[in-house]
Amino acid sequence: MNTDKPAPRIRTMYAQKSEKNHVVKLGPDIKAKIGMQLRLMYGEVVDQGVPERFVEMLRRLDDPNCEGR
Amino acid sequence: MGLRKNVREAMLEAVPSLRAFAISLCGNVDRADDLVQEALLRAWANMGSFQPGTNMSAWLFTILRNLFRSEYRKRRREVEDVDGSYAESLTSLPEQTSRLEIVEFRNALKLLPSEQRESLILVGASGFSYEEAAQICGCAVGTIKSRVNRARSRLAEILSIDSASDFGPDRETRAVANSDIVRGDRS
Image (tube, rainbow over all chains, first blue to last red; front, top):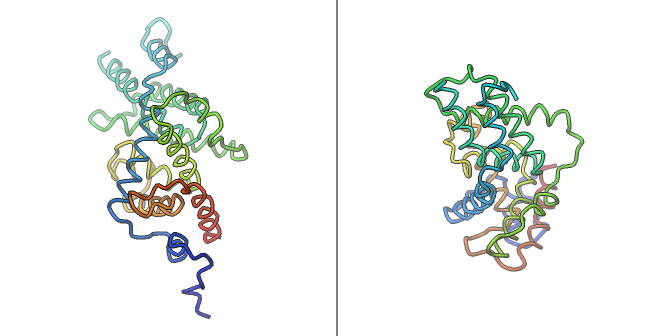
């Protein structure tokens, strides 16, 4: 039985694409868009800087009077 | 003494990026911060295993990832917090639309298999090379490349990005519909 080309269940162009294969060849603009979203999402956290608890923790690490924690 | 100081400074510098990575792994800020703290303590205790001259940031990411992996196995049944505590923890962002887009994007990322997600983030957001990402994940460079490619295609499907300008108001609705299709296809 040939199951290579199942009848499209959905008519939108997006769905047709997903029927074919998961590794679709993406244009550079789509890659750029995803890259931008990724960096926005990531940058949202990075921009918060170093929370005080880590500054404090690292300072204590370096204190010879309390090795370890 | 000098090494300890350098390591401490490198750790401090890596914290923001480690947090961003940790949040993308576990989807919960409090857990992510605990994970980062644990990773830093472990790195500090195992400073001897760091090879000077190699990328310290990649080393810290490797430790954090390994910790997450071993902890995740223990807590597998826990439901991850996708948009609950994390979304609430972010109070202000200049544009409401971009805020919404980020939340939507984060949710779309959650639909990816974890290996694809982490590979994409390491390469696309943390700024690591494919080689460094492979080292962090303990796999071949080719594996990272194919995971990143698959992650991008699936994201494009889930978010229905068909061109850079395709960010219409009903994108969310389509994203929901398409994510069901995508998951169905993978069965």
